[in-house]
Structures are given as C-alpha cells and as structure tokens.
Length: 66
Image (cartoon, rainbow, N blue to C red; front, top):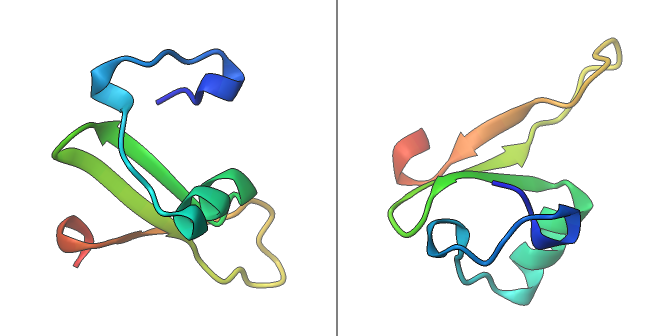
C-alpha cells in the first residue's frame, strides 16, 4: 500500500477507516498496515528494539497475528 501522501491513489483496495489515534500512529511509524481492504489487511506494531538492532521490527496484531 502506498499512502496518498507518497503518491498513492484512492483505490478501494487500499481504503480503510482509522480512528484519530491509529491514523497518527500510522503516520508516526508506530504501526504499519499492509494487504488489501476490506478484509485482507494486516496490522503490525513497532516492537521494542534491542540496543544493537539497526532497523525497526514490527509484530503482527489482531486476529491474523495471534
């Protein structure tokens, strides 16, 4: 998925409704969303990083990430 702010479109396959908090988290890089809307989306949250990790790790959350 490419956000509109980065040249993405309004295609129905990438649209989803988020509350203000999750919308902010998405833009702040706290969560990321991939897949196809409406029922194939995968939500991941930023995991705590060890001091020696160079790039952020994300963990799946929700029904598909249990």
